[in-house]
Length: 135
Image (cartoon, rainbow, N blue to C red; front, side, top):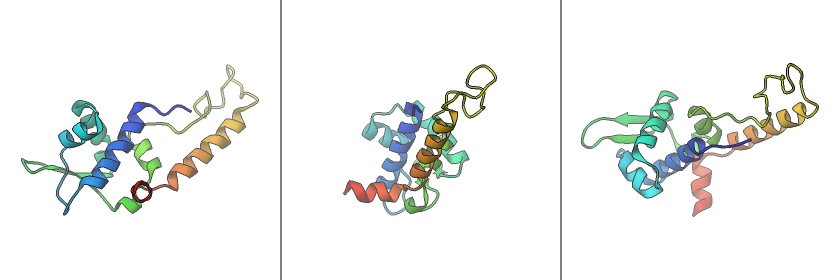
């Protein structure tokens, strides 16, 4: 399984958002961009997907920005990764069971089981837990 920068950056940005929203004031993407070294245009693309998947809320205007849509203790890392169209799948056939032409390869179930373990692991970790462990 390969986690691309899309998934990594989405998790970093959501953690930054969770750490930096003070008194429910929205966090600007430009500030996340500067703190995390992620381009603003890339963050805009990610936050469009995060908003569509109801992980963040946006506020327009000069004091606008983004807030988490719910508590950091209720947002899992798996949710963030899948919201930005990342696939948590270690199989080479993307779970289609056509690993070798039209047949399932001999290790298909192994990689399927690994994918499920990774998904369970990431579903068991929230933003709040990462923040707590960071301290």
